[in-house]
Length: 198
Image (cartoon, rainbow, N blue to C red; front, side, top):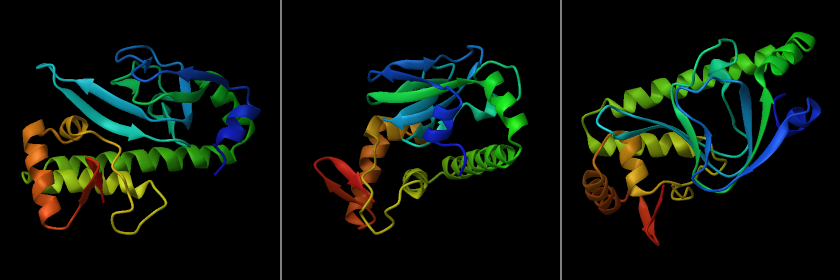
């Protein structure tokens, strides 16, 4: 994979430190940068007309974001907010595009990342369209676990609160709490120190 921390350093990316709960960009802001997470977790979300937050993705170290607007001049359809302390690199997208022109193999990497993003969004839509709360929750957890190296049962600690799971799935917090208890009784998840293991 070409696009990593070393690559961002080589093209003069700026490194920034963020505290928990800080905005990296706001919804409707003009897009200027491509971002790369060195440390921490970032939430991509939006609010509907009723004021309910909808989470589109949770991003982890070694993941990029901002690619969707790389080749178009448009505003962000969502906001990016840190959910832990973060170290994030950013590079001006115009500079990044010039780099792509100099190194055509990078185009393949960008296309691969865009394809992965489209796939993950389709996967999410499929899961949250289910009327079964358990399927929505396990679908999200399965998706999050797929980005981690550990694949054995109960090796993945879900990095979301019950409220964040509710925002991710479109369910109420009460429904998430109730469904998580059912999933635990069925042996599909474990709970340790209030954290979900999958």
